[in-house]
Length: 142
Image (cartoon, rainbow, N blue to C red; front, side, top):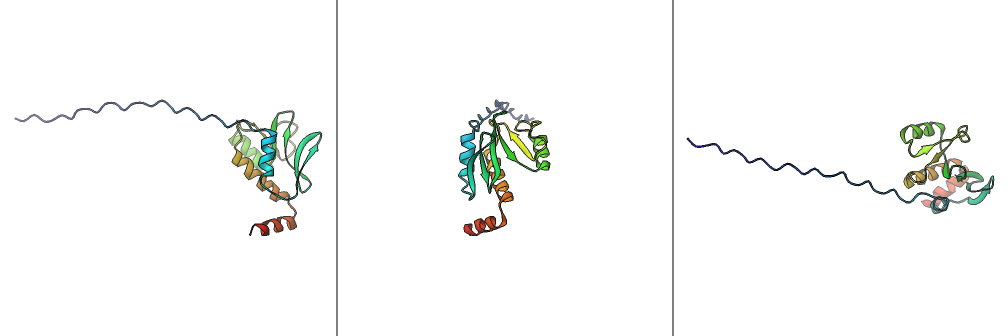
């Protein structure tokens, strides 16, 4: 009788330690936010002060600014988007009683995604742009 060949068990797979989380990018600051916004190259954007604080206005309206009381950027969003962001990303976004009545949201500077900021700035610039300015800007890109 021939003995059946019993397969040799394979060594147990090595368990890898979880990869270290990537360090977050350097925290956002007003100068970094201002540069990101101005680098978009939109017309009718000016740097000014409102309530004694530096702000950027587009078409004469507040576009983006920094809350000195919370040391955080403030962004325009719809109330619906704000509720969604607060629910989905509570570690990133927040609102204070001062901003609650308005369609605005604050972000934690060490957690905010620059791509989100860029998309928000583009969208809000387009939303507050007069139709003639928006048409001329879009035509200049063609």
